[in-house]
Amino acid sequence: MSRPPTDYAAAREAILRTEIAYNTEKNILPSVIKVAEGLLSRGLELSEAYREVHAKLGTKHQALTMFFDGLLNTAAFWSPTKLTTAREKRSRLDNLNNEIAKKAGELAVLLEKRSNLNGQDGFYSHTHYDVLEVMEVAARHNSFYEMHVSEKVRALRGLYDLRYWPSLGEFVNTLAMDAREAVVEASNPLTAAGTASKRASQADFSGIMEQLPQT
Image (cartoon, rainbow, N blue to C red):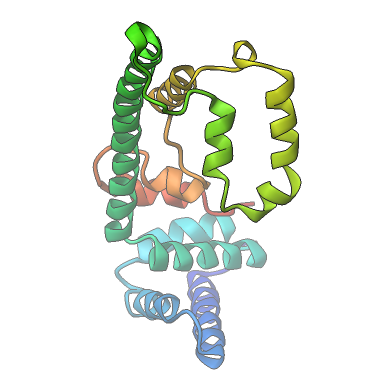
């Protein structure tokens, strides 16, 4: 037998007040407290939404508690402003990868041209040409490299000449290809759901809500 609406409201209020009391006592998560207080004050306004929640989870106290915990944390830490910021960061990362792909591709071409010109007609620029040598110079301030790796790398350089290693141009071109083919993805389901659309919309919050725990 289902519980009457008044029982549902009491259960919801008890969960929210418990959350407020706990965070207040521990002096933590003021944003969550603010959201919980807001939900309590808007009980009438949100009654239809609550009715749907209780219709599905009302007889399962643990599921109901998990739902409101997810709701509070989502509303506190994934506001529309924060979702907009996250979307902007994704866009910046995309732009950076595009820029790296372009610049690294250009650098790869220049390195190959320089490599071809070096030694021609009696001229040589005395620049790096060995990818392992570049790695050694770049790691000269890395004590772990010096203590554990450098000797082995030098031994490899002595055993295998340049024919066995990628050229600097090939090395940099690989970085260009990597950036060009990169796909920016969210590192967690909530971020993915909240930024699925290209522009901010009501669907952002709906997407996040679908990721909240349900049983």
